Amino acid sequence: MNYDMPLFRPPSEASSLILQATLGCSWNNCTYCHMYRSKQFRIRDEAEIIEDIELAGQRYGSRVEKVFVADGDALVMPIERWEPILAKLQRTFPFLRQVSCYAMASNINEKSIADLEDLKQLGLNLFYIGPESGDEHTMRQLAKQPRPAGASRDSDYLFDAHVEAAQKARSVRIKTSAIFLLGAGGVERSQVHAEGSARLATAMDPDYLAALTLTVVSGTPLAATMDRLGWRLPDIHGLLGELRTFVTEAKPNRALFRTNHASNHLPLGGTLPDDGPRIARVIDMALAGEIPLRPEQHRGL
Image (cartoon, rainbow, N blue to C red):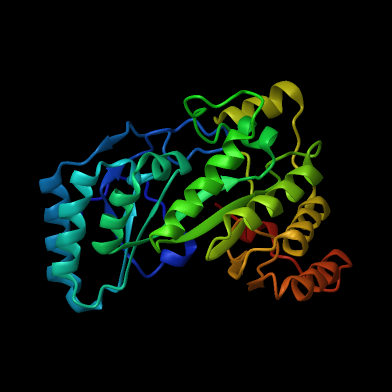
């Protein structure tokens, strides 16, 4: 495979074939994110992508069951570029059961229902969406996406855009995985960030939910804000408190929940909302020092 590094994928795609259809991120303005700042965004040539699929088919063939289409927001590709890629994947891998990608809410909402239905029929069946917070102020501070045309500055346009995106995906039976960032509101908005995130998780009603812990990376706009304005992350007790609020207040219909990302202090799992009380009890035990946390040297991005 002809990878352009660095390369990122969700934890659940560890055993997947990674297909780089785009390089970098078309938005690349999220204040906390360093992932694609070394790259100039572009959509790879179709011939390059097809060649990578053919090479992977020769090497891995029937072993491939899942494909993650990278980089940061591959859904930005027009439907005309997606169609030959998905068709080639289906022809090449006989046991393929999942094709997924990162997707900004704006990219989902810019696609018509007919386009999303076509993508589903061709095998694209999971979007990873990262609102990171459900607190409108925090989402704007993170610069999650540009303000939609016609949206009032006083409206909760980022919150609403993510709800709309999840509903559109669900309407065509494409699954969604929603990602939230513990600590994204800083100390000042820690509680409202946690409560807002639980409200958005409930409204989006995704199939999967993940909580990661924010790491402030040198060179990002958030790091500059931290230095200039004294913005601070909550301490470990504050972060676990946010997590406790989230698992007790998020009420999706039924979502598989995980905190197994390397950034987290406490790996947890279950189904929300049913397992919320049990997970909260485990968090309480961790807060009381009865359960060990992941050592700091073992945490990472």
